[in-house]
Amino acid sequence: MIVAKFGGSSLQDAERIKHVCGIIKDLLVEKPVIVFSALGKSTDMLLDLASSALKGEFDLSEFISYHREVARQLGVDVEDEITPLFEDLEKLLGGVSLLREFSPRTKDYVQSFGERLSVRIITPYLVQQGIDARRFDGWEAGIVTNSLFNEAEVLDESYAGIRDALEPVLGNKVTPVVTGFISKDREGHITTLGRGGSDLTASLIGAALHVKEIQVWKDVDGILTTDPRLVSSARHVPIVSFEEASELAYFGAKVLHPLSIRPAMKTNIPVRIKNSYNRDHAGSLILAEISDQDKKKVKAITVKENVTLVDIVSMRMLGQYGFLAKVFEIFERHQTSVDMVATSEVSVSLTVDHNRRSEEGIAMVIDELVKFSRVSVEANKAIVSVICDINDSTEILAGAFSTLSKNGIPVEMISQGASKVNIGIVVSAENAHRALTLLHELFFPVELAA
Ligand code: ADP
Ligand code: ASP
Ligand code: MG
Figure 1 (cartoon, rainbow, N blue to C red):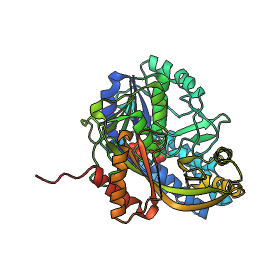
Figure 2 (cartoon, rainbow, N blue to C red):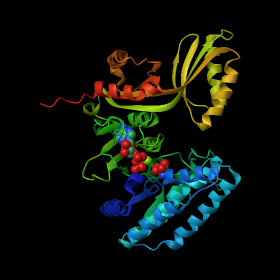
Figure 3 (cartoon, rainbow, N blue to C red):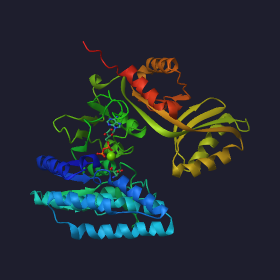
Figure 4 (tube, protein in one colour):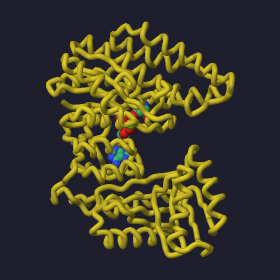
């Protein structure tokens, strides 16, 4: 058995969906569970509609006609399935525009329409093409989360839930088609797993069913040395370890959801990233153990933006141990997660993600820290991460520092952390892209034409 997930970039129009159907037909011998994201950029469209609704006016017609047109071109009659969803969405956005209020819970409800529509349009098409497919919304497939709306965490009971929901269907040789990204909490409210969360759904289902391989189909030939939208000379990386892939995703490579590797890693199931636009390409394989030949000094470089740098200097009111313990206890209590840390005897520098949810947490943390330390906070930073073999860190750091300093880019903090595969370099946001390009050039030089 395998899990095969197709993201929005593989499902943007009827032609692409027909192509994906061809891929699924060839995968049938492997008894696949299929996971679909929303069509194309429809999650972005939904969020834009909600922003308009918040300002008082919204127009659903483009969103509706996009979905209807895809269904029409696929030749499936799904009006009875999709019209009630459009009506619900209209009412919901009407409520947002009336109340001028858009809570995290409502946001998840709004975002859920993308995936719900996508499986309601594509599954009947798969059936029409002779595939015995049956659709499941995430919660019908047994997935349950906590109530941290917008970035809900999957509860352990989901593993048994997925088996209970999908095994009988698979036993009857039916192909389950599951919505990625969306789920419900125990109270029955719709939740989402964070942007790009369909990758996580796929990995979770794969782990629950102990499949042979989790396939994630995208619009790139797999993992590349950096984001090809930022550096056009980015190159293909054929083999990546779970650890490297986790760090890559966590530190900003938008090719995988940050937490998506975890379930696969826990159950030691290989993850293969494939290109639905170039299906003969082998893609990238993510594995527990990689051979010496596949180990590289530098594997990839990522950039994570919207980072806030916090410097905390002890006023020596507490002993050294007490100081560090107290600092991190405060972050923990305010549920503010720290990405990078560098410490000396009397000071700590660390980075936190800056987003709507963390903003309040950071403010409360600082209120407490200033009682026993001097604190400086600088927003608009970025972390450029070099995913590498840490045994070579001296050489990598020397090269990175010399390149950045020659180009006048100040390094604000570095950390090689507990992770054995990642060196993090903090620079100001305005230098991030240039730092990424320079480091990519340094570690992956474009070979001169012979
Ligand atoms: P999908 O919507 O199908 O899940 P995504 O758009 O989420 O696909 O992910 C694929 C995109 O990730 C690529 O088009 C590429 O621009 C981007 N990307 C960012 N970093 C990397 C990287 N290191 N390797 C490959 N792709 C990357
Ligand atoms: N549709 C969701 C998003 O755009 C989830 C996903 O694509 O994985 O973020
Ligand atoms: Mg994605």
